[in-house]
Length: 254
Image (cartoon, rainbow, N blue to C red; front, side, top):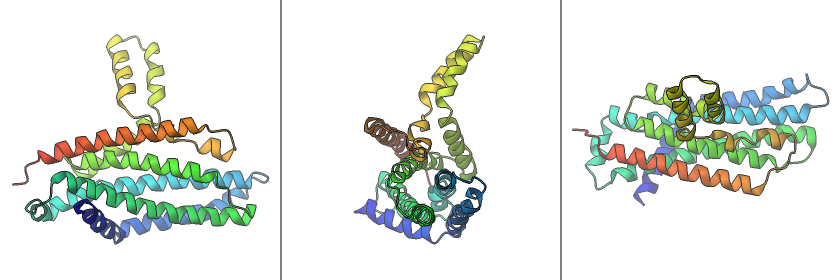
């Protein structure tokens, strides 16, 4: 119940954040702008709209995740409200999880709004609802859940600016994780090759969640690959959250 209470308060707090509305309105504007872009590719309007729309959702989902997520813990410390919180019968793990789940709910609401806008625009062209898009949208949301865990992790021990930089690094490197290993054989320095291989196995592989191309071009996506990606994301996210709790429990706020 304590975690749900903190999550509810976090949700109400983030909903009042003006930055969140600016990001959301800009995202909706970009989705509408995709109508103009699609007109430049006659015969491919729907595919362009789907690809552009999903990419916008991914980009602005990332912005919401990072720039709202990295300040959740630090804001409590900066406003000194953390002292009130830890003086109550609340475990620190409940605080971290409550903040995390509150942001999850905020992100979900934003994804629903962006999805509704995208489907509305697509309906003008197709006169039907492509339910396959929901697969890509769901995987984008799973990816943001993953990145959000890192945003909370970094915010548990460093500043919002550094947390944002590190979270963006995780996102970018996560999409090139598979390529890092391919660089190894071409490197003459053995220690550097070992380092690249180590990074390949440590850094998350966010390409598991990237199925936008397959969905847009109606390519086959096996249920097994989606299930694997979901399990991978849940397990990795759980480990990151446990590390966040471990670090936060050992912080001294006196």
